[in-house]
Length: 190
Figure 1 (tube, rainbow, N blue to C red):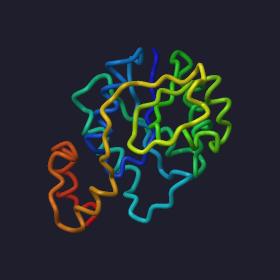
Figure 2 (cartoon, rainbow, N blue to C red):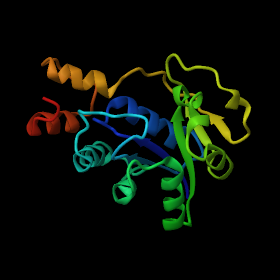
Figure 3 (tube, rainbow, N blue to C red):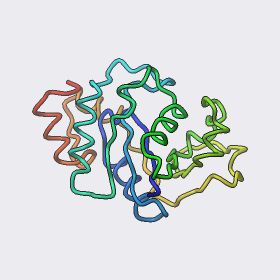
């Protein structure tokens, strides 16, 4: 199976994530998109990062009705911070029957040469890139293992959602209803 990997903290998962994942699963040759819930991004230090099992639970509930989308906790048992190449290697060993592709936003492409073993990622996995606001040009744009996928240009951020919650503003329509209910019931981010 051809599987796209969508890495993130998903703190919380929001409709922007879901629209991108669904676009990748339905408008490309990817048969499934897996949300790789990351315990800690090596480039981010976030004090408001919800526990990884709570974030995984929110992702699983948000995608429960879509068989083309899946969540994985593969990084939970890996050394931290975990690097994308290490996760890709682990997934390839665990699921040799699948071909994995990395999904990233256009805003990350300019920084991609700073990633650990980025050449190996390009050579063995390739990138599916979706548009992001204010993305910088990248010298990698002509690379044969990079596919640019037309997708809605979304500028929804988990930071905005968390700040809205702290300010007691509604997050309706920014997150799936099941995620909104879970956040309110468990008092996440307040």
